Image 1 (cartoon, rainbow over the protein chains, first blue to last red):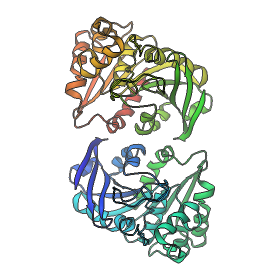
Image 2 (cartoon, chains in turn green, purple; image 1 turned 90 degrees about the vertical axis):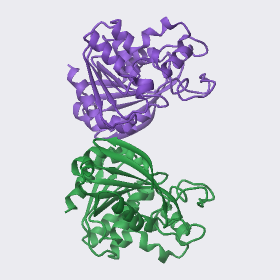
Image 3 (tube, rainbow over the protein chains, first blue to last red; image 1 turned 30 degrees about the horizontal axis):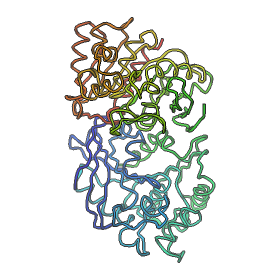
Image 4 (cartoon, chains in turn brown, yellow; image 1 turned 180 degrees about the vertical axis):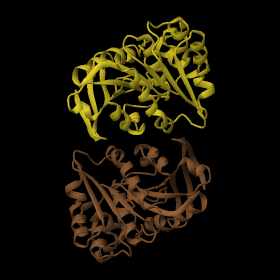
Length: 280
Length: 280
């Protein structure tokens, strides 16, 4: 692992690392925030943050304003990249923002040429926590959160791995990707035309089909002025599924907030406190 | 004025505007944060934030994490650009990061071809406050702060206009530009070779020569791990000048912090509280 940035912040540390990933078969970059108490050797729980389309590990760390609350609560935050990267990594032929580089959708691709490197599900759920837990002063307590495409990632990875994450949250998530343009495009490209292969990566369907061992608490925050609300996000599908199956979903709509990091910065402290409640 | 962004954040609003500036003879963009109480018609004081080399109005607004504290204190924040911009604006022939576009140094250039547009001093001190105070629910109470080149701007504009700003602060400022490479390059290009013309834009010299009507309180924060500390920033010159003239300078060195926005995000709440004390 190569340390590529190291910045003291609010008494703790922001660090970026580059490493060779076996799962994605390329170099990956991630960032970690370590609260001040981690420097004195105390092991802290970890919130994994999954970013949205076009983002890297940097967006959350630079824009979310999460460090003061995370430091006060004693929580580390890990932000991976949103796809494999590099000259050898296949991209969308049309170089669009919503497929290929910067748009891994947190699944294991099965379709060539994407199947070789686009293994973001295994990278996030398995390889990355192993790296984090062997290199940093952290416990094996994990929570997962994310924004937009990363909200989809947090919900699907969280529901499918309720043994690994104690709580789940999302800002402005894609909740029903099998039914919205972003999801249909990505799933067709990464998983192929057989839609039965898509169901395992759709939070609404996972909730409807009870594809979880333990119903971990979920917090979803959505802005009412979000440009993508009606066409892409459609959170009411998740609310309906949760209600039908009595799933512990705390859904909050916030008047006037949009899809930007200004929304995340406004409510990240609440999300951190939510996750802190479930870290034993 | 054209509104180019409008984002709700922590109950208040972040807005970006583009407008034709008479002073810089080109279109300028600035951003403003308005705390929630401004929406109910209450007039609030304004902190002007001057950014560093290469920045625009966006860096502080996206990365400083200042909104929660500013909202709680009821302070508006205005972030201008760091130079005139546009196809017709002359740039450094070498397109360097430290002169020309993104590097206006908050002075009025006297040397062609820069003198026509690079009038950032008058823009920040005169034109921008007139615009802000005629379009937004703000009082005429003003404070000024900034980072690096913007710290130089805050100190020099603040000292020279102690009737206009009630308090001054800076992160990692260039305090003695007549004696450091960044300053010498910029002043030569904008003001010419006659060094007597430079003295009016050097915080250390302004303090030494008592070029202020009222000694407004100054807070300076400096990280000890700042890459630019020894060659460019040299804050001890300011400490020495303040001590010699009994100027009310509160200087704080912070162990381990660097030149990045992670440093600003760590101490911006303290700076906001500092300025709030002096707003009557």
